[in-house]
Every structure is written in structure tokens, then in C-alpha cells.
Amino acid sequence: MRYRDLTPEEKRVIEDKGTEAPFSGEYDNFYKDGIFVCRRCGSPLFSSKAKFDAGCGWPSFDENFPNAVKQLPDPDGQRIEIQCANCGAHLGHVFKGENLTDKDTRHCVNSLSILFVTKKK
Image (cartoon, rainbow, N blue to C red; front, side, top):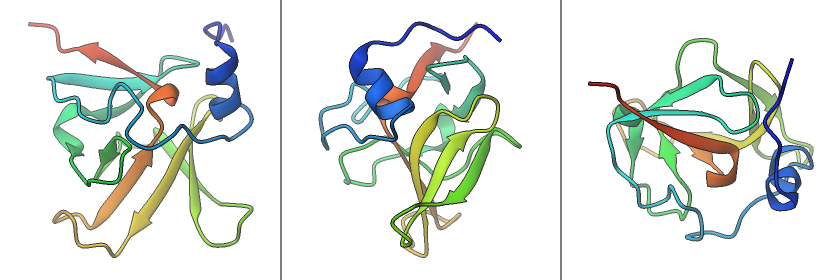
């Protein structure tokens, strides 16, 4: 499988499971019609319709496309890590029970882990 070339900062987040600073990512306060794909492999992950403002400083989605995201226990023992189901790229973490949307789920995603693709007319 051919992956997109990543910058050192993208590698730090995607491959080394880092986190970008809150409120610093290009997609935190970004609301356009389209989809968000994995920055490394291009697999569709989230619809823009699932994006909401959680006020946390990272892009937040209350659902992913079916079978697009896998959830794994985070090494910290407290959180659930989310990865691209296709290539294993680190996306961020998922939280439940916050009552921020009807789906009661917040996928907290690093902007550096995703790319936006405009909806085709």
C-alpha cells in the first residue's frame, strides 16, 4: 500500500501517537460540506455532518463511517485510542458519556491526522 509522504510533525502525531496543541489545528473551527479522510492513506473516516463544536480545541465528530475507525485501549489505561481501520494511523481518542450530542460520543481527532475533501456537486 502506498502512503502519502508525511511531514515530521504529521509523523509525530500519526506514527508516534502524539497530540497537536489544542486550538492549533486547521480543522478545529472548520465547517464545510464534505468528508474527512485519513491523512496517511486517504480512507474516508468522518462526514462533515458528524462534526460539532465540543469546545475542546480539536475537531470533534459524533460518529465515523462504518468500519472506518478502530478503537483500542490507550496505553495510559484511561482513554480509548482511535486509529484508521485501514492503515492504523493514530487519529486521537473517543469519549462517551459527555452528553454533547444525541449520539453521546466525541471522536476527538488531531487535525494533522485528517484531510478534508470537498463534497462534489
